[in-house]
Image (cartoon, rainbow, N blue to C red; front, top):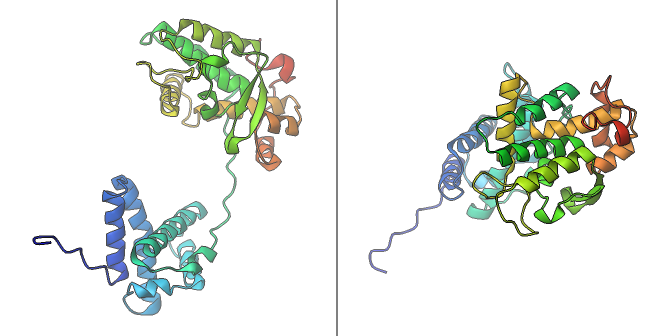
Length: 316
């Protein structure tokens, strides 16, 4: 067709391929500048190492010949030297390198099966960072003292925090409750990760807080609509909950670790501190593996609950 633009020639070198990939991330994937820069910072040193290792510039075809040993040598290099990367940073670098090679395969017909054979360093499991009983009470009480919010929003914030702490739910699970779930019964059925469902006991104080919020709602909701609503009536999101906790912890002088998920951690550690069975806590949290629940055994829970059924800190 007259006047049609010819497609650009495919890159011939690894460096040109990297530039094309970063352009793809920017303009097709609409990745943020920070994300694009992070990918570049991971892959550019990788190419530089390979060029020095081979003693020549890398062609595009050479990217399909990189061996698992070459990649392992690069990762070992990044873990040593004067400025070694932490295991988590090495794992992130490997993830970016894999993404680059996958793009080379899809877009530039340069596959490399050897890259998938390399495993990253084993990362230590993070220790949960719960809030204390007093801090959890303080967060809920502070939510009820916000002069800039409507009464129904105050009731929502109190209900959400009480639900997270009282039932040990993930924020996504709490926000999955619908208007049809109200009034809550003695237990609520939750669908967690992997589509696995579980029954979670509901304390009277949780049931009461949810009921007060539902009665104060200024919006007419269908049974299948999400129960928790944002100021303009849309669905309340995890980002809203994170902003709420950020505001509250700032007022109370709590650390950044006081997040919505910290209330779930508190639920578990408070029960464990009372001598609750690990397998029971596993079921309540919806953990697929007991080893995940066992992380809470490392958290100091002295002076907390005596028994879940009677003495959850917020029950009294």
